[in-house]
Structures are given as structure tokens and as C-alpha cells.
Length: 320
Ligand code: ASP
Image (tube, rainbow, N blue to C red; front, side, top):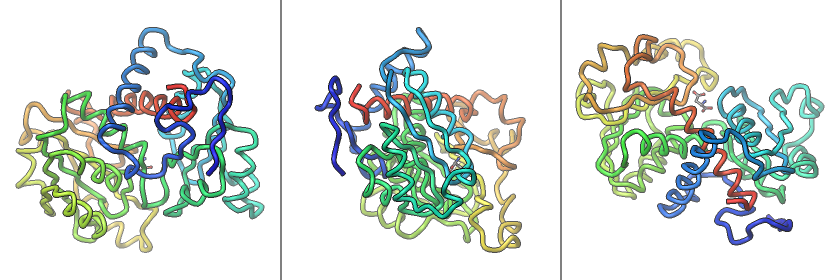
């Protein structure tokens, strides 16, 4: 894609004018940079609330799949930086329902906006959009593919809560097959010296492709279908929703939907210093009694997400 260089933008800024499509774009130095900016954003929001760093910039937020957190945290992030948002949360009411193609929709929106956040049901949709767009595209979830901004905020959460990543044991539990957040997060974690436990019903196992990538990266992985052998040594318990919308057969969903339910009894077997994360929305996989446990980090995790998304917007728009 061609980059635009409006006056006043920092052309030398890392990620200036770039698309954010996959976590594979991020090395350790990039992560340090993103998180440094995100920490500054946290400071700004805590002290001042809103600034005008992105005043005059416009974000097109286009979601072909449902979203609460990703969509509203990008909106909040843009508005806290003084920018504004074109919200297309319901493509049914846009020209998509008249048969407009994704390339045409993004080439339309980039005429009005400076950056596009896109969620789409097809794997690779953001990469396709980026091929046609000249403005930055941020992948907000491409089907069962990736959710890079979620993985970045997940990693930011781990560092904020537990101070470091190296040396940790991370246990991912639930739907590892269709859950795009665990696809992105496991790839990102493989840059660090961690141990990964993958716990799921056999039909919801982590895709082979990702297991191969983890093996190539040298990440020690344990695959299990119960938490029993791993809960006591877990530092981060990353719980996921069984992705009902991805199943071909309702009966297959019914057979696994309650396979893992995290309750206070589960956490009794866990370390005192560990965290429970979830990209949310939660259905039945974590009981509400867990919410009062200080180890439950999933509501704090959402807030960290806004700071990370503020950082990413400022970066791709050349203001960080
Ligand atoms: N909100 C996350 C996602 O969009 C997780 C989920 O839907 O279960 O992938």
C-alpha cells in the first residue's frame, strides 16, 4: 500500500502508515515500543482524561461481526485522543447489504477516514482490505484467524499484572480451535521464554499450524483435556468462550459447551499469585462468583485494551 504523509505526522515513527494484520508483524522491540506508548496513554487518561493528539483524524470502525469491547474501546481510544469515529457496527444497514464488495467498502471509507478498523468473518479479510486500501487497516478479528490487537492487550495485561512474561506458565482453556484470540496470543507468547498448556476437548484442539509454529519457536507445550494436572503451576489461566457461531452442527456445540467451567473451587487449587483472563464475552465458562476473586483480571484486562488501542492508533497515524 502507499503511505500518506500529511504535514505534522512523524514519518519516522515505527508503524506509521502501516497496517496491523497479524501478531507476526511484532518483534520484541516493537512490543516494548507499543507497551511504552500504552503506559503513557494510561497515564494521560488517568491524569487528564482526554487530549487532542489525534484532533482532526477520523477512524472508520467497520464490523461485519458482533462486537462490544473491540468496537467501543477503539471508539473510546479515538475519542480520548481527540479524534472522531464513523461507526458501522451493523453492516446490514450499509451498502454491504446491497452487495458491495469488501474492497469497494474500504476504498469508500478511506476517502473519508484516516484509519480503518475492520472485523470480518473471513480469515484473511483484513489482508485483502489492506491490499486495496492506501490508509492503515487494523484487523479487529478475521473469522477464526487472528485478533492481533486483543493479543497485544492480553500481553500488556500479563505484564501489568505479573510484571514479566519470561518464566511464566500460561494455560489456555476452552475453544482453542475456533478462538482467534488464542491463535494470536500463543504466537505472541512464543517470542518469550514461557511454558504453554493447551487444555480443550479434543474436537476443539489448537490447530496443527499453530502447534507447528510453537514447536519451531521452541515453546514447550503440554496438550491436555483436563485442568487437573496443570492448574497448580499456572500463572495465567486464559479462559475462552466456546465459539458457538463457528459450529456447523448445534449438537457438536452442545456436546462441548460446558466442558470447562471455572469456579471458586477451580481457583482453590491455583497459586495465590496468578491471574484469570478472558477476552470476553463470557457465557458459562467462568462463574460469576469468580469475579470477586482478586485473581480475576478480565475486567481490568478490558481497560488495558483501551490504552493499547490508543497507542496503536497514535502509532499508525504518526503521532507516537
Ligand atoms: N471477543 C473475542 C473475539 O472477538 C472473543 C469471543 O468472541 O469469544 O474473538
